[in-house]
Length: 396
Image 1: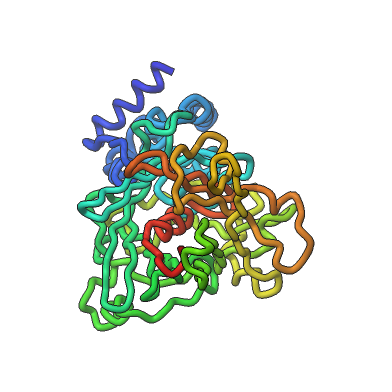
Image 2: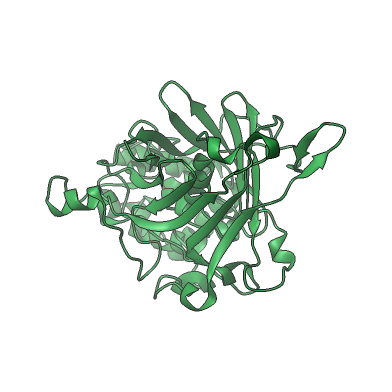
């Protein structure tokens, strides 16, 4: 493994690029290499030996920051990249986030992926990190950032893969969350089609694109992927309790959580991100059954949409408060805390409706945990959690 790491370091020095430990730049600019490197001795390594090397790196570097080595190998040359396609699995299978596109792909089927959100009140910005340990807070691996915006009739959040550039006119923009005037209904928009046949929503940004006021390379599309609604509390303070919310996942069929079900899986960023991202999609196995998930319109036309609802808390007589079991992942009581499960809209509840798909809770003044799993992505989970930050007087 020491020899393999020496090879990786040599790749970096030859290409003049450095792998940085950030999603936004670490897996983007770092994997771009010169054409001359493609013709180097590394490109001519015997296929059997090359596969063995990459398999060992993939197996040994299974956590960040060591995961940088996998990113570096994928950017050496075409032959290295093609073999990496067959080795690196999507998060649904591996439970590991590697490349930028993985934040748009469904989480692990087997367990919750543990993350945390940092809030900066002064700048109204929010940062999502992947937890590197089981602790409630560590250095984390940066995943996404969001900045709040306000307009006369609505508010919302711009979501980016760059912690320093959270503008919609940037190649780092991947989506947004927008609310109604009361802050009781939200829509999550993806910057690119979540599945084949997805329809774009007309908006000010799309009009600007059509009028060429913004570069056509900027991925400013608005594809609705989820609708979030908070139940109004018509009794006011007399029935004060936890918020009740519902999420209709427009891009995920209800059958996704059942046996043999699958959710649409994006495999690469749109053309508008080329200046910022590499021409390197998040790789997946050719044999994996979701390979054709983007080949046609969403199956929800027949099966119905996946609906998530918050798990009902129980009233604790001794503590005199509403309680949910977060298994140690939440330490501060807050009306923002919630757990989401699948709602059995058109049939009896089964074991799949008991699984926590997303949980969010407070652990510090400006620190929150966010744990999610299949069939939603980190991007979708982050956007849902952002909706909980707004004060909702009509719902409390």
